[in-house]
Amino acid sequence: MPRFLRYGLIACCLGAGAPSFAAGQATVPLCFERQEVLPWRTLDGGGLNFELLGEVGRRLGLVFDYQSMPWKRCLAQVKANQVSGAFAVSFSRERLALGGYPGTHGDQGQADPDKRMHVDSYVLMRRKGTRVDWDGKRFANVDGRIGFQLGYSVGDFLRAQNVPVDEGSQQADELVQKLLAGRVVAAAVGGGDAVRLMRTAYAKDIEVLPVALIEKPYYLLLSHAFVAQHPDLAERIWKTIEEVRTSPAYRKRERELAGQQGGSH
Image (cartoon, rainbow, N blue to C red; front, side, top):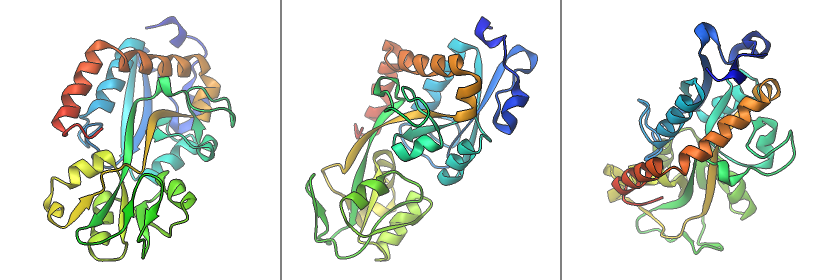
């Protein structure tokens, strides 16, 4: 076990979300959204996010305890220090109140994109035959609300565009059902979700606009308590994410799985 894990790591100080160092091995609880997002993650522990974190854990002598839950609850548990972190989380200054990103210090700074887990995009989905549009700079023909999932950062982007929004959906499938029912005129969904949805029966009635709404890096967000108690370990985790992500073996694996998803990322 690396020497930096042996000293000053008292799990009780961090409460329920603390890493456990029983039997000489560190177990770090992390939450993630209870939804399949290809090629990044599946509910049964597959996908590139888990492969990346698995290799990070092997290199550092850590075991990550993955807990799936609704996204807003996951972020709330990080803020309450009930888990040690969450993935995959895009950066926003408002989320600095929840936890720490690589490169940030308290409520200051910007996340370091070199230490991201991956990059993904949001796209706009509409019913076939409707006219709502996005050309990369502005919306057109928006005659109702644009939906997005509860707690998703794309809501900040939509509000900045001064379009009416609907944030009432927990899952991407629920959002598409709302779109098909005419309760929203379009849906802003993640690129991985869009790939999956367009492989379902929904595809006959919906289409994805060709220009992405926004592209973002996604990070491992660590709780403030974890970073405060284990600053060196937090930095090592983020640095090792960069090292694994840029390694030839992981890059090859990323090309393989991204190719299976139609190269959408």
